[in-house]
Length: 262
Image (cartoon, rainbow, N blue to C red; front, top):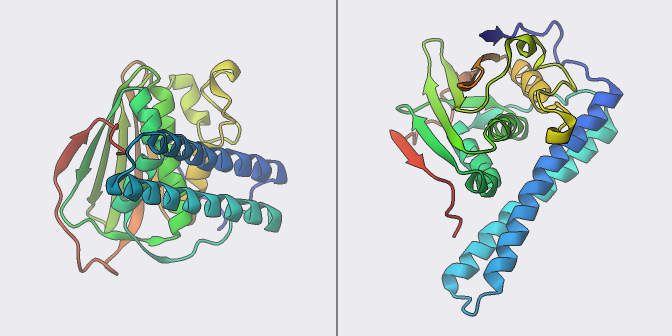
């Protein structure tokens, strides 16, 4: 079963005031969760008897991540106060692989607890994407968080990044989770719709609606395929650019079980 998204009719898809407020809460929750994870890691490390140079380096890295997430929270609140629409996307070359790595870092503790294995596949010299780094980071993080929610008892998340034949970059996120029932596939991008029960979720169902809006604003496409009991695959296609690709490198397939933040 698959769902293909159609282009929006107007640029900068309008969001109601209620949706904008709930969107801000949803995004703030993701950032705060990441910050709290690193605060816990810092506390654990600083309580050890030997705080050597390697520990100090880890602490510095964690603090930088926390600082960046606090800045993101501040930007989300400012955006909410400014308007009830997604802001116009900025435009600069974005390394999608680096963004995937950052998103994985933010949710790594959760993936470790849930026993989720990550398999990363990067094609030869994938193009960069011309777009808004903050908004694209939200897209990637939300898709990964969605996969985690589908695999509470463990599983595998495969992330592939490749160029396609239309000068676009294709990102494919495949999980081995519970899958989405056929009757719910047509609604998964609707604001406030969630496949999780209220007792399970505490999630307002805004993540995928946000993903769709940002992808469309970047002139991209999104496709979802799912089978109950087998898993779900999100395929995102975004226009690529050759700007800033001079130092591209070749990386094949890697597999890891999240766990080493030390």
